[in-house]
Length: 252
Image (tube, rainbow, N blue to C red; front, side, top):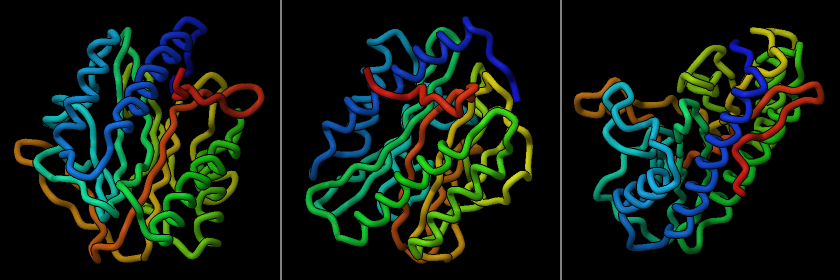
């Protein structure tokens, strides 16, 4: 795990704030009838106009500025001609680079009226993320985070995605360590003070396996539930401090 200097932390704060503001701005346009490609353009325009660039464009061949994961799409949903309709849930994932550092955040948005089960799923993913963040302490382990996340999700009768999780972040988009959504307390790599990581549990309605859909000319794959049931995710970039964790991806 890389440890940040005071100067680097300030740059991480700026990148995180830009990503958070871009996410909030883009979310205001979520409504029935808009395409995911239009949301992508809105997010990219915002990032560029505020002195940053999207980390996603060209990353391992990924062609778009954000990820738009609708309904059964767990993550890496590719913006395109898909038109949002009433009852959809969508995760918008924004990663911005500013002054050479990354800020990475995502949130769920509702399109019109959604089902109670969809609301329950999203509420669970949101709280699971915060349970994971609360479990962070310098000298703790990645397993502490995963344990807190999985314990909460399981008690709600839902299921964490094990194959994909959070990660270290800084000058690199995805750095060590991997931050799982499952685990045992005291197990896994240690968390270092002034390290920066993402916490991003993905929560599914069922325990069905995941499927992968290839993106042409990219090493990134779209991850979906194999049974077509819903998935939800929230994500923050956080700084490990003396007192736990400070969220860097809060909007201004």
